Length: 319
Image 1 (cartoon, rainbow, N blue to C red):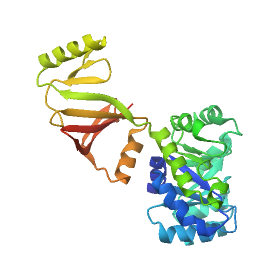
Image 2 (cartoon, rainbow, N blue to C red):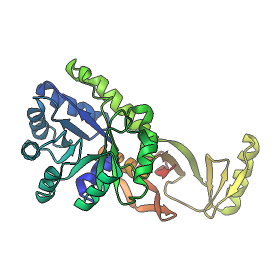
Image 3 (cartoon, helix red, strand yellow):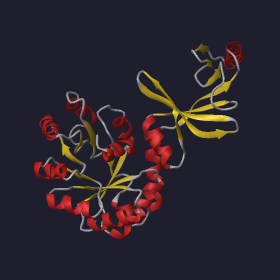
Image 4 (tube, one colour):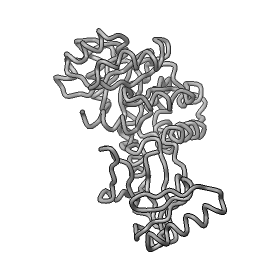
């Protein structure tokens, strides 16, 4: 998959923006970044679109900016000239798609039927937009039409808000979700960028679902781990459970049989999406220790952060 489209998948949420005043573009992009969303789609639905793209490209280089509602080859070329790094269209226009492929421009055209998905496959695409998502039948319909096309990923857009976000993202068919609830035109026009930041942070929080999964304590031996698990389990009325490396008391207290990262133990932070949580941590300056990556059933399951909290290491774990 194209690297930019891979990055969109790690972002998970793609704000879809119709902007009337290009002077609002830079503070909008910065508000999204501050809220934890590093991508944006500026749609060709307003006269200010190209100027807004240009300003973001020049002033906010960390923002992965794309152009939406691309209907013609001329618009595609203009968007790229203004700094757009990927393009999105509401439907599947062969002329536009073939131009973009010829110019090595990532594009996700809109589809709504199996026939359109097959045209996209014929053209060599592996990510498309599903539009209008809710009006076409929502997640159930998307899962149904996507089932035969295992290699195709979808970015559903249209009618999705924070109440639907997580259910869509949990689908194996979904690459990311497009939405506008955090970038409503009235918020942008009123300069309510702090509110946009708050809505964006809330959306990222819903997507990642970061929470304390368990506390791991280094106990020194298997016998000591079993004893401590039974002791605290008796107090908490929680059953003890043995794994190859530890004893658990309930699900939230782990006693390690042997030393592990962290002088005293570790804190396990659970997340809905380990890959997106890793990407998020790296964006906010928290380094990952890739040599500690653990797999479960052939998939990434946990990884330590380069963090020490009073002798406790910290790792992310797939919930």
